[in-house]
Image (cartoon, rainbow over all chains, first blue to last red; front, side, top):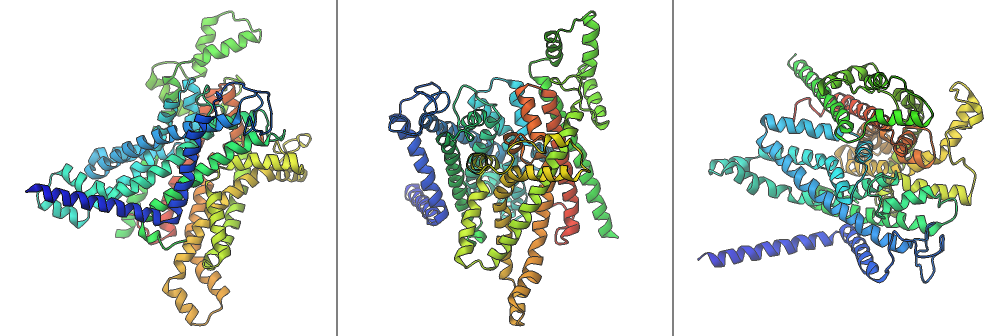
Length: 296
Length: 339
């Protein structure tokens, strides 16, 4: 008896997802962002399979302009810039995915709990969010990384998440507070749903789209902040991230010495990453707030 | 009378919340160095030994230093002393420049940061707002759409990356502007001297350009969307029907009404200027808080880093608090009630 029903529901769900995807890709902004982002990911995965240099090792003479052997030239230590870029993109994406996942899930959970259950715990969590939003992120991360000294990539991601969860938490909390007061929640209560059931069935689904938009935005934030910390010479020292490349560019004054291939490439790649993520975020955001759709 | 009571309650609630938030932020700042390994006293004594100092009563000296760095007594005692010292404006001693006080170092850098960021923020706001207003009013034109895409890209470019490009352009290709420092060293720091002010402005051109250009996008986009929204409002249609001149409608009706949120955002970002452009200062060796932070990182001077974090936390927190309180006064549609 129940099988045809579930299969209809499954079909409906599949159609819903397909429809959502079609909506998403009908947004020019999202599509453009997605294409740039996907090409960067392809570029770095295919590229690192083809270019076999160790990004940290001197593999050739220093300060060589781009040529057929070193496509993006070499830096002042004779390291291959192309390999650094390919590797750097991957490291940035790893950090971005780690930070975004932790922030969005942990932050949203705290937000749901604080907003839905309220009371003393809700207020206390609200105050903690406010504190975290006031603490200046860059100096605070600097203070932590300086005192910790040896920072691995995953630890860097955790430190970023320490400051990244509060923004989504606050947003989810205020949304939950307003959803809680709507009529359909009363209807669910009257029909005898349990509190946790109401939370998961009635409230969480309303926030999923917002969470996906925030997920993409948080990736941008994580890459940006991680690069900023590394430009100061902090973070994982034994890895060539894009931020660490910029640190060496500044340290070796590459701009003054016309070593353009060394500094233009990481900046160009980072800006492409930022632009693509931002475009995808805007596309998703428009789906969440249809009011914004008409705006250009 | 009822309304006044509610406002009053809102203020009291906000003030209490502000103090709680600040207290916790200070506590976090207090705990971070104490939770991690490393002892500033060992560092300072080691440094003095290397400089050739001799110590007679080492226990007594350690005792003095423990008191100076606020490491004496139990943690709660230390925290209470830390708090009282902060209220007296004492942030402890720099490890690197011992026995110079952290507050002296920060006091030297802060005016430069405030000058650079204040100037850049205001210029960027004025330029971005005017262009955005015009673009929003003519939102169907292709030029306006093209500007929006430029602004979108500018909006996500970090200022310090633009700073690197500027260095390349103006150091290597067109060497006209000074690249480092905040003023000509021979003039000395004298805020009353007109030559000093000129030199200060001349030196701030490149660093401020990096901030102005990258933040233009944001001001542009925000006012543009406000004006586009306003254009559909009834009172604009009415004034058009009345036959008022288009320029008149734009300045008197659209601009005035979209200005309020824009001014609020300006106030917000002025509140955060201390946190502004730490990396630009480092790239241009501009002697503000950012450069001080960078130097303290390279010398592991964590009492100074701690001081900078605290100063930024306090000023950003205070600015947000002031704006929270002011907001309902500026915009009567926002009530003092908790949502």
